[in-house]
Image (cartoon, rainbow, N blue to C red; front, side, top):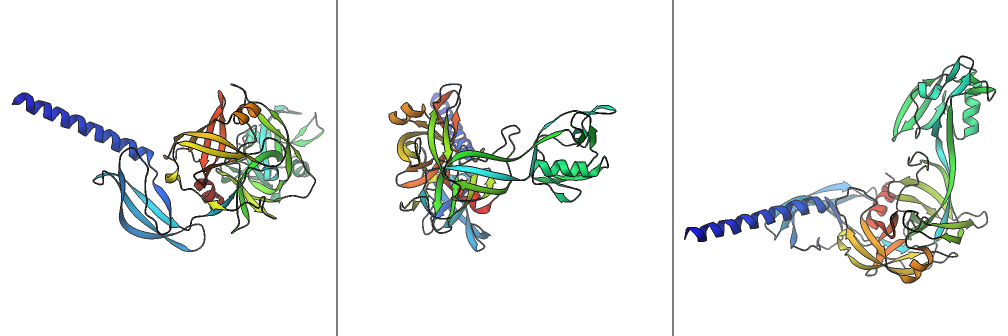
Length: 403
């Protein structure tokens, strides 16, 4: 009798531990917020049954100036064991034209970015006025004595005009506005007043279109921010254009060395303008759609499944093709808004041409079951056949909000 009781207690304790482990796992893995199509209920695909019990609704502005109802729900294991609370927002499912077309990026920064500091050979010895003023690589200089700085040449002129007098420098660091006093010194080497900084005011590159919204005339691409190569800082756009290009050559990716698509700019007539560069990609407006293909529904993150999918990308010329991939893992935790999926290239033709994912393919749309679910964002350096993808939902949200 006592043995039977002990066995039953042990089994109950083991079951309790397993349930606790499952609740802890799902509490971390499941998102805190969801979008669903208007008129539908939240349905989650998971190994164990999880239900969403509706709580009190409230309101919030989203996607537009209109106020949208948001419901609070309790996610429960087996419909009885609470896991966590989450928010569910019903929206009209966005209809988007999938991309895959390459485009050229030309942008001028909103200010100039410091990429390096260095000593100046002055009469009193080597000094670095910028460092003394507290400036750092990655800072973006906006004004000098109230005058807007839009290029390296204008910055040099502002320092020269001061003739050694202190100047007020406004700049941004990690998105925060800052002010400092800087005193340029006369460089014996350059024969001019300077501050000991090297800056960048523009850049050009290649990316892939992810989607076009017929409702708004806007597009999203890349799936990750445009960052400065030296500092890793997300670049604020002052002026930017999306330009037509053709993919002219491929550097095949191998383990330890990512490959690259190389493009040639076509003519001078731009496709459109770039309006926003943020953590989930680059966004702008186009003069006309990049394709006459029909729009398809955007897939919400909870609809995505591991298994077969396809990507659209261009590895030669200007027209995209479809290639098969396998979605190996899905991360709903939100730890990184651009690394939501791990995918593996399975298409033999693409592997033969590129070795897998290469630079320039960022933004290639991922499709599954007739829906646009995400975009390719990163390659694994040690295994170019595999890489990360972002949820299309994240691109759509942050492209609309501009944050």
